[in-house]
Image (cartoon, rainbow, N blue to C red):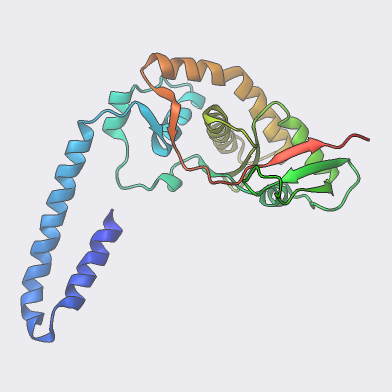
Length: 248
C-alpha cells in the first residue's frame, strides 16, 4: 500500500502548475498525512473483522505454524496479526502455483525430450477441450522418479532456492493447494535446519512422508478452530497438467 501512496504523491506534484510550486510544499505533506491517517483507520477497521476463509497470507501463516509444531491460531487471532503491508506472494513459504510442466521439469533439472524411461501424455493448456495441444513425449528418467513420488497427489512440486514451483493436475481441488503449501513450509523449515544439504529428490521424498503424517492433523485442527478450509482465496493460475502413462 506504500507504493500507491508514493505514486499518487508524484502524480499530484506533476499536476500542479509551475506557479504553484510554493503551495506544493504545503499541500503535499498535508495530503500525505491525510492518506496515512486514512490507512491507519482502515487497518484498525480491518482488525475488527474476522475472515474464516483462507487467503494466501493466512494459509501461509497457518502451515508455517503447523510444521513448526505450534498451536494453530483461530480466525480472530490470525486476522488481528495478519500483515497488511506485506504482499501475498512475498509471504513464506514462497510458492509459484500453476506453473507449466516444462517449468517444473527445468526446476527438477531434467530435459523434457530426452531419456527412455517411458512415455507420458502431457497437457499444459489449462483447457479440457478436444483440441488441446496434447502430445506424447519421452521423459527423462530423473523426471520419472520425481513423478512417481507424487503419484498419490494432485500436484507436482519442485524445491529450489527456498522457493517451490507447483504444477497442479487437472481436477486439483482446494485440498491439493493446501497440501502443496504445507509441503513447501516443511521444506523451508528443513532447509533452514539442514542448511540445504541433500539432493532435491531425497528432500521431496522426506517432505511427502511428513505431509502424509501431519497434514490431516493440521486440517482437523484448523477446521475445529473455525477455519473454512473448503474456500481458498488463492490465485492458482489456469494451467493444469494431465499426465497419463502410455500402454506398451
